[in-house]
Each structure stands twice: as structure tokens, then as C-alpha cells.
Image (cartoon, rainbow, N blue to C red; front, side, top):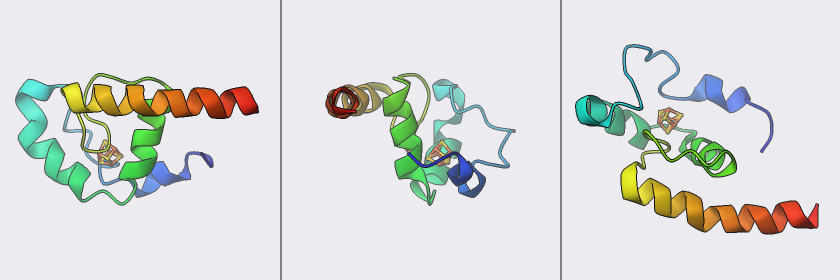
Length: 83
Ligand code: SF4
């Protein structure tokens, strides 16, 4: 992952009014933003790297986020071990 510049291009960069961790209240508002986000892949990569399982990351949340992170964590472990 190259730096954190991608965060400046995130669709949520100016959406401090929304809580990406409050799934009960905000999914209807946050998901469309994530689906249109140009850096959703980088967002998911952060979720994988730091094992973020709460909230919405790259348009995924709950069980699908958990499955994605755990599946791709094993790939990271292999990469990290090779480093
Ligand atoms: S995909 Fe990630 S960076 Fe993009 S809007 Fe959603 S939470 Fe923000």
C-alpha cells in the first residue's frame, strides 16, 4: 500500500456528519457513498491489514466484511512472511 494520499480522494472525506461504525442508523446513507467511492479498494486493503471488522469498509460490513478480511488476511500473512 502506497501511503495514505488515497484518503484525500475518498468519497467520505468530508462526511464527518456520518458515523461509518453506526450500522443501525447510517447504512442507507453510507453504503451509496462507499459504492461510488473511487478508493474503495484501498479502503478494504486497510481493513485487511489492520483487521478492521467493525463498521463499513469499502462498502462491506458485518459478515461479508468479516469474510473478506479473514480471507485476505491469509494472503497478507504469506506476503509478510516473504518480506
Ligand atoms: S469505501 Fe472507505 S474510503 Fe470510500 S467512502 Fe467508504 S468508508 Fe470511505
